[in-house]
Image (tube, rainbow, N blue to C red; front, side, top):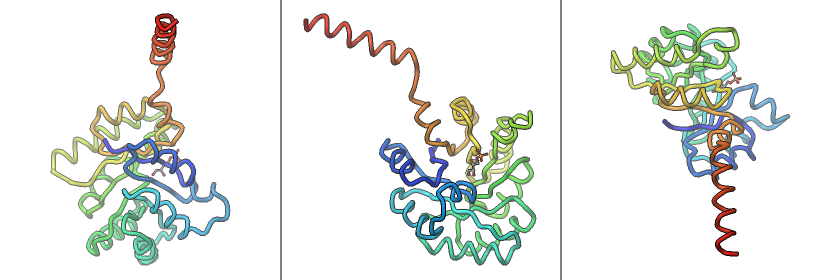
Length: 215
Ligand code: E4P
């Protein structure tokens, strides 16, 4: 499973890249706005210079023509930009137009399996089921990952499933077990994935015993 970091913060992206296991980055308008009044395009270029893998950047137009125009501009910023487009009717049309032009898309805000099937038919590179937001309203986000995996495997779709809206380590564990191709994870949660109290206790004991022998 590929690991992306879900942030627009350059320092967090540098820290995640330094781990040596980072495959890409996802941003969205909310994450960009958290960075203050940055120049959107310059900021994206800076991210693409840190991470050579796919960097998702989202359109803000909601109509087909507007989305395609914005997507062309975003895709022109760097070779590794993937354009995020919402799973709406207009977004589906834009996905097909962009795929036909060779522009990679990440179809975002996916909440039900048929959205995933349709965007795969339209040539999406990635689809982003938002599992945490489904759990937030007492649904089962992981069930959506499992359903999309089954549909894609049944029909041989090559669109990659990107588990998004990950809130805690178990979302990442379950995404991996269910065969998500990618998980995009906040930096804090990536760090939590390597934490275990028994690792800390075991290491402390090893070092204490080592000191006894050396003493
Ligand atoms: C990723 O592509 C999404 O934009 C992100 O995971 C959304 O996460 P949130 O539901 O925590 O805002």
